[in-house]
Image (cartoon, rainbow, N blue to C red; front, side):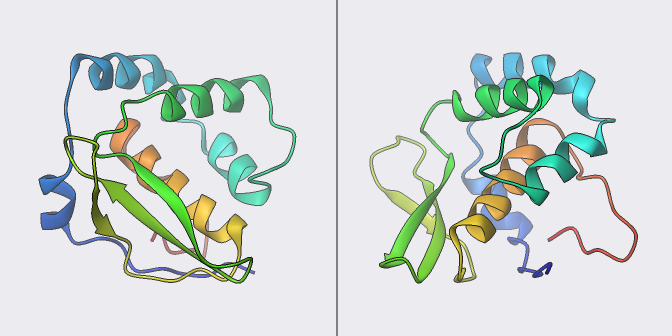
Length: 133
């Protein structure tokens, strides 16, 4: 069951978007996957499943980015509630919390994946009848 979570405001995204040589290199490495909606769907269908080699490559690049400004997950109520948060630009404290609570670890991981995809690859491919939040 797909759950739609509110997107972040554009102003909050620009405040915490560190750009570095590493980010440029990651965008370059992931550019060839921008036209691969199958990879997005593969992750959204099974965030913790066995993934194809291409998706593993994408995830490795996303996860190897510097901590500064990166989205991550936090369990706020043991095994019942999760949130997504974003590190500050110096990577020392939480600068921003996502506007929604999530009832499963899978849902919060999907949300974080979408934010990282938008930051490094670009617009998420749309699936018929689905919101891209």
